[in-house]
Amino acid sequence: MRQDGRASMVDVAVLGAGPAGVATACALARLGYSVALLGQPRGEALEGFSQRTLVQLRNDGLHAAAAAVRVACPRGSRWGGVQSTSGTEFIVERASFDRGLHEDARRLGIAVQATHVESAQRQGDVWHVRTRNGDLRSRAVVEARGRRVRGASCVGPQLLAISQHYRSPQARPAGASVFSLHDCWCWLVQDGEESWLQVVGAPRNRGAASDLSGQIESVRSAVPEISLALQGAEPVGALRARAATARMVLPADEPGRVRVGDAAFAMDPLTGHGIYEALASAGVGVAAIHTWLGGGDWSIVQRYVNERCQDLWQKKMAAAAGFYEQASGAQTHSFWRQHAAAYATLAADWSRHDPGPVRVEMRPVLNEQRIELQRVVVMPDRPRGVWQMDSVDLAVLVDWLRTGPDAGGPRVPPKLNRPRASVARAIRWLATHGLITAGPGRADHTTFFSTSLGG
Image (cartoon, rainbow, N blue to C red; front, side):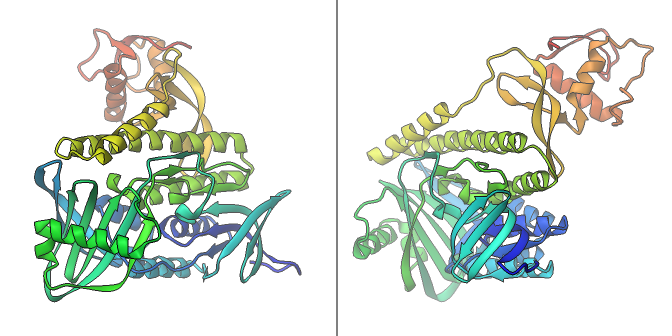
């Protein structure tokens, strides 16, 4: 960070110091950029992680954050009248997790500035960020302040999450459970003497703390498993209520600014994996900023980032529709049918199919930490195109297959520089999707005589 007499100047200002913001800031710092990380601490809460989220944290070098994860516990559910136990869930206390994230940032020389961001505006090639502690200038901005970001492009049905921390007089085994109820669903997580109960449903009487507390207590008493688990437990601290409505904001709007995590795409909590998707979006945000600051074309960056977000939104809306539809079979309240229908409509509205024939075209792709144009195979159900399969460049492979390799020719296109087994798997993938027709070649499927791909 340098001083020029007006305001501090950095390469990238990251607004928000949660998982998406810290992962983005750390990755950009490793690429050699100067980074300012601005954010405020969150309140306490227990959260559940999947195994792949823990793996992703470690892959991103966020080891202190990963170390904050407590234990793996069994995950159970009673959903739509069906009781099941499926896999495990890792429990983490959010304040400890955030401290771990900030420690990971500090190890890379990034100081977390605890301040409120008031505005971020672009003037020419420079972004001007105004905070309560002063002003900052940057070449690029990463917006990672979660659901507080306004201007959603699309919004799901309204949901409110109410949560309460409890402490029991005796320790209980760690565990997590999800229940579908009459007009809401809830998540209970326990770890020793600590428990958290979260209830998610349609907003009722906004602003009435007594009503929200009543909802929590009614669930606690109505569900036998929860009543038993919280027997003798006392509330700790104030009840918390927050918006849980799914929302999407196109991540790349102005040159040099990209949104990551919940600032771009916040899911219905029921679809899960929120922190995993936040970390995944951070990787895309890093590539977007790295490409832009390296002189890349913003229109290419914008197309890739926005189309990826739209596709993810469609998939998550379809998944949410399925969960709510499943619960509606055992619940008579209109809450379940209305939400299932709303999510199904959103999924249909954002479903993208390419109307043209299968073909090879130039499309933006993510190539390590840059976004660039590459030749991809475009199909009706894959409008963004498929660039590689098992690290094999499909367009190069198609070119080779189009020439009609014979038994005496090379068994692997030299230009691919990939193992024969990888090329064989890519060819089988093309055949499985009806893109090539197998000829009387070798048993390893590396000889084909025709393709259905246009030029």
